[in-house]
Picture 1 (cartoon, rainbow, N blue to C red):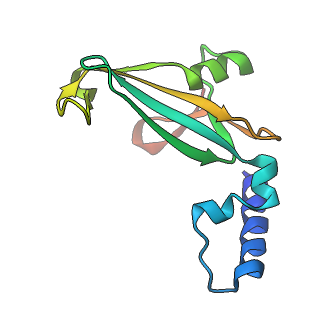
Picture 2 (spheres, helix red, strand yellow):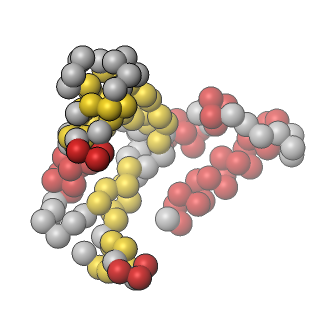
Length: 137
């Protein structure tokens, strides 16, 4: 958490020096800094409609991956597989397909499209329990 805050502060300061104190850089401008070139990467999120086969893809820039570490996951490799694994959207969690315009069963997945030069992983070892209390996993 400290590293991400530090990197964000460095990046913000560099962008303000380049564009003036009041400049609010867009996401593409942020991707030009040396901080992003070292720690930044791209994720591809996709949802495949099981009804018509339409594949919705979105891309997002990331500075780190937040991996959940539930009790049954005991290695970093397993946590990465869990992060990039497929999730079936069904029942009350059905996907509204842009192509067939219906709420349908779909498969959602996230993949690392372009890996960063320096991979920053945040291991989420706590879960929010009843009454907002943090519980160690």
